Length: 163
Image (cartoon, rainbow, N blue to C red; front, side):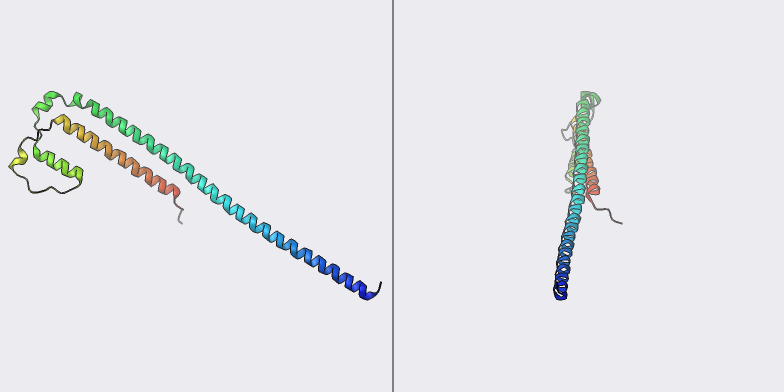
């Protein structure tokens, strides 16, 4: 074989080897990029799963809390006649002014007008009715507080930690 043929054959083999190495390197880069993407996706999915599990746990606790709150409120409502007897209803006249103040507070509005002699008159409300209304209002208040607490827990669980 002539020297020129040997050089050309060697150059061809080197070119083939260089091509093979270039293709292998490109495949390796592609595989590493795919692995990095898969790892990032797996991390993201792990985070989403953890957040979903935390959310489910928080919602379950919220539902349990609210159920306990409503059960306690219902129990207290049933106990009103025991603690506020018909004799107490007859002995206590709930003034109209009290009913107006209570209703304004429940509605979250200012008192309309000024107090007058009519506010001292009886409202026709029994003391036991007032007690049931107060129990219902506090039950709603506690349920709303539990909802807010659970919402705050959910936000903390689903927020990115900040350094």
